[in-house]
Image (cartoon, rainbow, N blue to C red; front, top):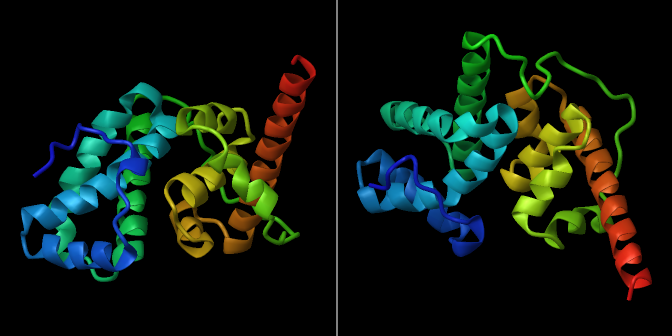
Length: 202
């Protein structure tokens, strides 16, 4: 079994959805190889999300998350997408509990925010994250408004659909879509401006 504190880049693992769903079932049966597959897919995403929430305490919270997930895995029901949402929910609760215990202000707002306009998908904005490294993406995401930053992280880094991300944050799916859309558009504008500045300097 992989140690909860270890991390590996998500791009190093290209396991298909069907294999990951099979890994969930295998891990529930106690198969260590199956658990390792789940961990390698999930941990890097989870750690990047937790870094935004709790900063340098992310690895500790991730370890607590995996300990709880391992203990409760027998009661989990669903496929790999459901598993990803389930463990992210555990991680967020752990992170917010940690912030409360240390009397720190959460990096991400807890109250529900509603949006009246539901935006459509935008391929240009979706490509914003793909054109830079993950570390650079996180630096850019950190300057977004908090609701947009969390929506982008959950949708793009963790890989959740809008409905699952909404259930984790206590918001509507439309609000998550809108926040992620706005955040990605902002990131795309930053990247376009940087590219133009680079070209002008050549």
